[in-house]
Length: 561
Image 1 (cartoon, rainbow, N blue to C red):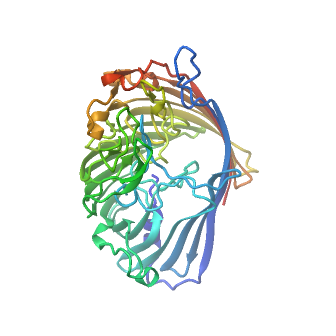
Image 2 (cartoon, rainbow, N blue to C red):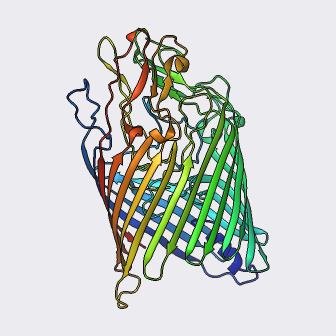
Image 3 (tube, rainbow, N blue to C red):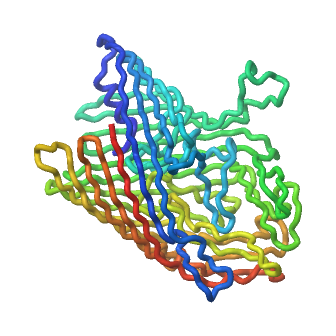
């Protein structure tokens, strides 16, 4: 079980307050990781001379990246410790120093960035994958008291399988959720080698305050009520061969009704303030369970998110005919999500794995991520797994596919579309994945060193249509196009099948290397095959275009310490 509370539970069980405090000690763990990546046709389109304005966007892409992760611990005594998590050259491409933020992928519209505060679905510092030369991901302190453990500061957040809270600390992880959190944790030992662990937490994912000593008091003074706060609790019942736990919470933000949240461009290209701010009152429940039977391990996690949320999302205006300058939401082609949107999200995952004495390792993964036929609808039902929960090398790990492209019906200018159909997280999918690895141990003269060969096969179906947009409804302007996938059944919206192979080695005690390759045969869900309602022939017709295969190779080398 990949839960990060385990080290705390062990600490509570082994360290007694009656013991003498030990001298201060320091430890450092982490890794240096370098990757070489090559992939071909992730857009799943190839040149097609029979189609005007070919949907092919690119072909072969190759790049190198690196990261030095440092996880220092300063233990002052048996009761006080300070921890940190720092990334140097955080997945930066060789020769660059750029900052990236994980956005929300919307076919046709493109990548949408959630504004701070209003769009704080996740935690402070939790959505970055490339963060310049030096990234302070987390620093927190742990205080062991007679009544339990207190953890205060910016800290990793993980629960269960990691579909809803994932700290991104696995070998091939890139992102990771961090929380500005005050956490209290206690454990009660029961009869029969069982225990109950429980905790309370207060998160501050967005804070709009300032220190008047540094900022003065002559500017805008915001109300404390504009901040986002999350209150949660969890309980875990643990036995030697099984455990079950529930993590739940409530998030609240009293946003200024009617205020704007971001800046976008209208159909005329002017930069204008847009985005609707408002309140957030949402709650979540995350149930996790594990059962160990001999060499087999069964794990399951289910998440429900409900209530109301203000995302503050606004999309650039699309330059449809007749749309020009605008002053905000609903004008100039600008698309804004309403404040206080109802949210109702269901997600679930199951894993079964086994390790055999002869060296075999088998796994089965399956799950469901709720989709939405109209991702920009007034009700939020599409959220997606955290991106560090991975089932394949490409599928729901790399942006894939190409959405239909809109061209002006008169001038032929490109208006919108031509962006990935699916992003780098499990979303709008019912999936299944199974794999096998065989471990070959080196001779006894090389303890702990091994070599593995493995294969994985993954397939998935789209729960709802990925593309189903009515621009007249979204913008409030009549006689605009409406576009929808032609497939009317989930089983016709097959994402395809991906076959991955891998070779891994662990040598010299600290050196790990992996060579992985994947081949994706796309299904109909990635085909460009849509129905278009086109009043006044505002846009050109969208011809069908079948998706083609893609492949990827990734070489990872890391020194772990």
